[in-house]
Length: 156
Image (tube, rainbow, N blue to C red; front, side, top):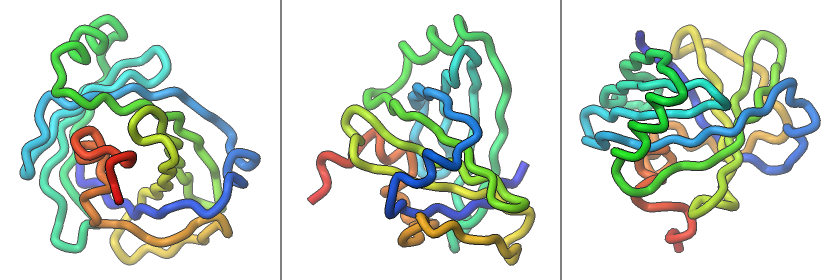
């Protein structure tokens, strides 16, 4: 239940050609407290509720618990969420033994694209595709919970 991941900005759209899957995701937050967030997500036709804990100091890991719920339940919970719904398409790209999840945002976060890769441990190595740019692991402004409050379009 501990998630270890690294986040990166993207330098080109080449990941789209390498993707083996893409899914529309709508998500909102029932709670965006610093020490815990409660997220509701509709990923295609499947709903999820997720609780995430506070990130470690290096930003690489945090507690995550997720449960699948029905589409109807997710839609009802999305109506109860704080303002600032996240709308994105997630592209999944396999590079050797890792799957990169690349989120291409819409709405108030249009123009932002972030890739994440989950790791088995903090020191695990992975091959970086050429389209990975600056690492933003641990930078909270790139967390979806923060993008819902301070979207990309408001950055200077």
